[in-house]
Length: 217
Image (cartoon, rainbow, N blue to C red; front, side, top):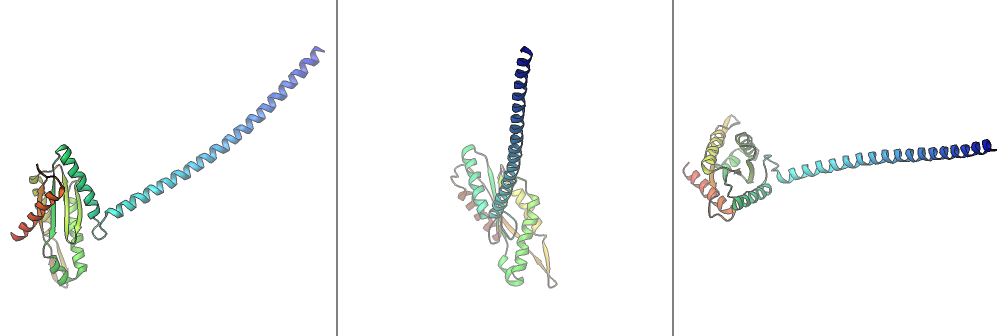
């Protein structure tokens, strides 16, 4: 009797263990499926997020880029100059501006056409960029005018950079119908200084300086 009772009890326990193992296997299988679904869903979500981030970066670049020259545009310049001025007013960190203006540009357009005029502007950007530091910003301000923001640069350093740019650009030559087309620039230089309240004051001094440069040849 005792042997029968023990056998029955063991059989009952064994049956319960088998049921539990079967249940555990079902739970593990379900967990495996859920984990696979989660990984698959997460991978898809990550891919969508990466694509959205890339699209956002490309859109931001387009919004801040001048389509003709590839330089930054006025929108990007306005944002950056506000940041530099705020840094200057808060910490006293100096910065300088270069206002680059292509000389007699209307004559180039009138005599040789807008296609040559556009190439001149593109070459100005192409020749200027290698002369600037990584944290400098070159932007097309409008028409044939370009701005360079030079953080942590005093007026002497900015003037040296401006002269390098001027000398480099005056070497540009195009051949149009066997005629040499040359382009030169005048550059106004200014530095943020004590008493300035807005970046417009720094710009105005650069604007005055570029007209003086033109008057002086």
